[in-house]
Length: 201
Image (cartoon, rainbow, N blue to C red; front, top):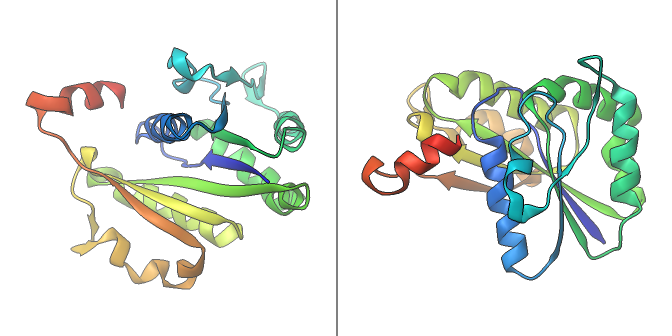
């Protein structure tokens, strides 16, 4: 069964492409067959990581996202060999159209019926972006049925909401069975990797 890791978050600049690149490198290092796709119409960061050989899928017509363009993504993923691992980076401007398309067409169920195992990556950022990124992640959990891997990005601030660690919030209790895990991206000191990661983000 092929696997689709799709990164979804409505908030821009919180590390979606960074997360996608980490995951793609991990899969490559494991000697797995990896196909990266970048759909960000304004800032396709993932395809700039040249060693990933990332395909660019343009979702926009005259600067407006065309939901029918997601049909091509479905064809690419569903027509792949069963050992293929896809890492798809959806830009913040593609979040709402993709979610609407997914709900209307029961997209993830269709992919699973075609032999594709779907895992959503969702990024929750610390600091001032926590509220907005939490809302987006909870929308993914509420309106889809798929397994979700939650990445906690500490580079933008403390990983807490109303003085509680994010992963301990009651908000996630109804979805515990579908949360594959929590991956924390710790904030590195600026004198080591911090400056490089800040630049990437």
